[in-house]
Image 1 (cartoon, rainbow, N blue to C red):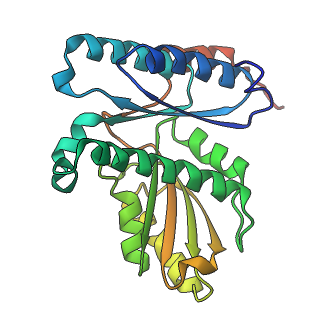
Image 2: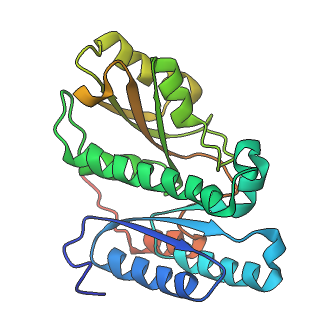
Length: 252
């Protein structure tokens, strides 16, 4: 595994917490990726309450280990699936696919955002800058619709996360539209987000065209500094260790 992460710039780690495989291996992979110099984002599921206290204890143990190594840990509680009426009525396999598809779309969107050339480019350094700006607490959102409002609001309102973005300190926004996308529509997406987050937040936005979207607009959003019991930044131990390792230079 150590050789697999060598030279890696960005690592997404996904796992289901509570059992043995994901709970035990995810922190190890996260640590190896971090040691290799990668920006590390972990997205993990948390067991249903009905699965009992033992799986919850296992999940909490794994979560604490992840918080010590990953730049950002996003937790998707399975219990939230029961609070979404349209999902609760689905067959078991289909219900879990909703969470899986949301995760896959978000991760692939970030990968595409920093690797694909656009009219206004976004790159890995932009992503790293925004994640570093928010204290390691972040969330990824993806929305698509016929108007800037629909696409942007869908990106903000993640059905599996209960979060407050009003004090978000960083935003990376990628707007993708068809050939007819106007500057005004692209700017409107960024402006909607600007009005919902901290006045002094660092905002970086880019624009890309994709003919396959037709008249639709797609918004990929990375926010840092959000408030949610489900989203965790680096642990206090790691933050203090990082502070102690910093040097201070005085310029005369």
